[in-house]
Image 1: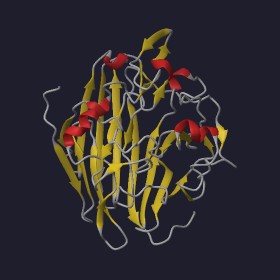
Image 2 (image 1 turned 180 degrees about the vertical axis):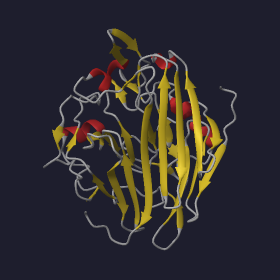
Image 3 (image 1 turned 120 degrees about the vertical axis):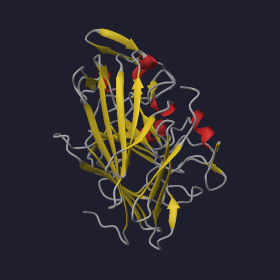
Image 4 (image 1 turned 30 degrees about the vertical axis):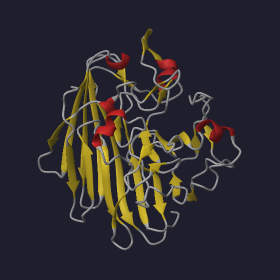
Length: 345
């Protein structure tokens, strides 16, 4: 696999919105959308030099798997058997390990009859410590109503765990020398998961009311991000999973992101029980920006649809087990629009 050549693929629609991605990690390298003056800008962080994605420690734009987010001590049990995963985040396993789905090459093919591509990867039994040969399919589709649909599918020949996500960093200003602190965010959730010092959920599901984590109505990201709060100090900002009320696992709106100066609106839909809001706290001015200079703290943010972190070790969290004969299926939609003034619905 190491001899594969990095190739770029492109989707565009009748409104001239365009999305580009690589066969390496399914990495989304560009999303161009218009502002209120119909000026098109790229709204996702990444690199001009594709070779830099080989050592993409920030996971810019990548498909994340087999398990998005953290697993405590890289250990979990299935039917009494303990599995040991690669640890790559202190004591924890993060985003699939040393060589997760973000660092492998995917087979890419166009989808007949749709403005879409199918990405395919076979993760062999034992890769990064996970049981089972896991066949993964991800579909990237761009519709003419400016909806970027991401479909995740997987099957395994052994009982395993799975939690797939997409890790694009958004900055709706289109200028990455700006931070996202002037973006308005709304998350359709009343609860979030506090974490311990190692950023593993404590198991408590906490109400957001009267905390800096309350985004039930549109709020500027910069308003409370530097508040004297232990949870914000642990993550150096927001890096927490919100609980989406979605018992029937239907597609629901999980979050909305709005940039008043450009009037760009991003709406995120998911059928997953959680969404990780990460405010780009660990960007440290060491990675080159597409618009000059380097990415600094809060240059971009992620809204990662997913199951809860460390679910395999917490029987109160929704299950992430995939059994032979079953099919994992999940959808995430990113819908782009321009709206002059945002109103809380």
